[in-house]
Image (cartoon, rainbow, N blue to C red):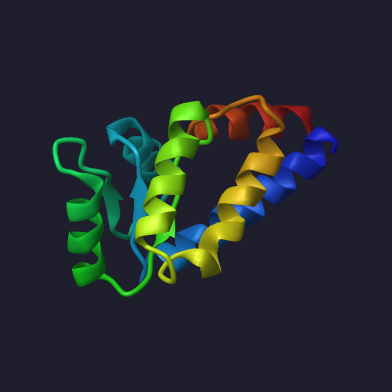
Amino acid sequence: MTPSERFQLLLRSLEALKEINLSVPIVVEGKRDLKALRMMGFKGEIIIVHRGKPLYEFSEALLQRASSFVLLIDWDQRGEKLYQRLSDLMEGHFEEFAHFRQQIINASEGEIYEIEDLPLLLEKLSRQT
């Protein structure tokens, strides 16, 4: 994929997610991920995975708050493990939005592995187009 194609895919995915986020919460790993999404203009509810609470309890509490949500978890080794555990616990409530995470992963082409690095990647790709 050319830098221009990567930039366009990333931009389209993020713009669609911003719109979805106005009515559907996004779940992220940490505070820096939340901050990065806010920097990119996300206005809706963003929920940080609670590290001090077992994932089962976090999942149960989340399912009581929302019937569907976006799992926007990092795709490094630790993030993939967390994504798998959360997806097992929350099956049926996030799948319709899972393709956005995959599009972001595809557009990053291994250059980044964390949501918090998206603003830098966007900036870099925009300069290359």
